[in-house]
Length: 358
Image (cartoon, rainbow, N blue to C red; front, side, top):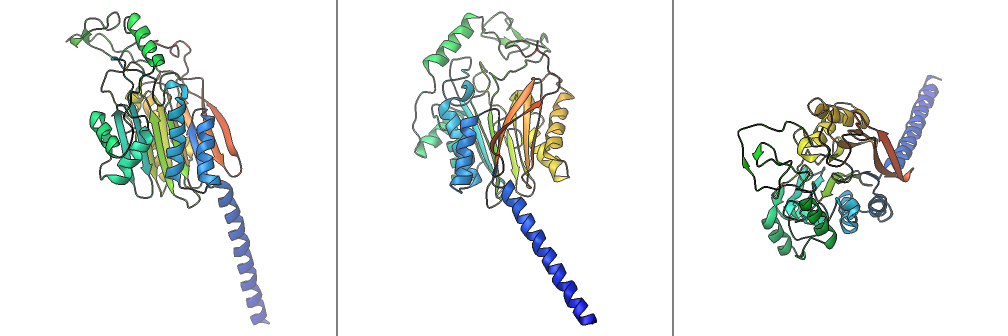
């Protein structure tokens, strides 16, 4: 009798384990693969989702192809060629792609005369022992890797630049210089008088980096970004997007995060790295993103930016500051591609106006 009871208990436990395994497998299949993308970049989301889900390819492939489409479409003129001319009228590109399994990174900053920033970044990842290449020498590397050298300027970007020049180069990114940068185009020289302690505040038309987080069907985690940087930036400026831990970060053991917004401010706080570390210690993606945003708000309450986060379970979230709402896309087997939007902290309609200084 006791033997029969013992056998029955073992069979019951085995059955329960099987049910749990099946249910857990169902939950995993509904969560993965998964894509999270900044802003309302519908076409880029659908492209990345097709690659990672329908074609069953890697997270790195999905990130590269999603960003590449945005570069080709010149999303909001803040990604890809023909947008955000610098003070000299030139468009340059920044991008990063990070492999969370290998903990390896490829990035390009200030890339000139090559349109395929995210693909060049992947070449840095896969064919060098470096993490970041910049400027003309990044262009040389790209050409050696088979990319075409061509101008990134368009008639539209040149018109933007000429209009800015005609408006006395307002707004710009100079401070503590003479002549007065609020009324002059320079050239400038250093001044001992500190005359500008204000913080330029961005807008969706000026800081719309595409950030992509992905976990593929094998459970591999990756992250990436692409942008043409801040409009009318000082030539040579590289923002947060190609910097690991600032623009994007991925760790196979935890998840991934990416930032978008005023990169000059955000890169000082490594918000993507911070969000991933918060998730490492148990925070939800939404709470982790909020912590990263709040860390910046402590010092720059009016800054413009958002953070997206994704954990290893396929859970996602976002947080933002200085704008009314922050849209972002999520795609998984349950949702398909779906647009979400969250309300942001510290939204000031006056600061949100292009060129406004708060």
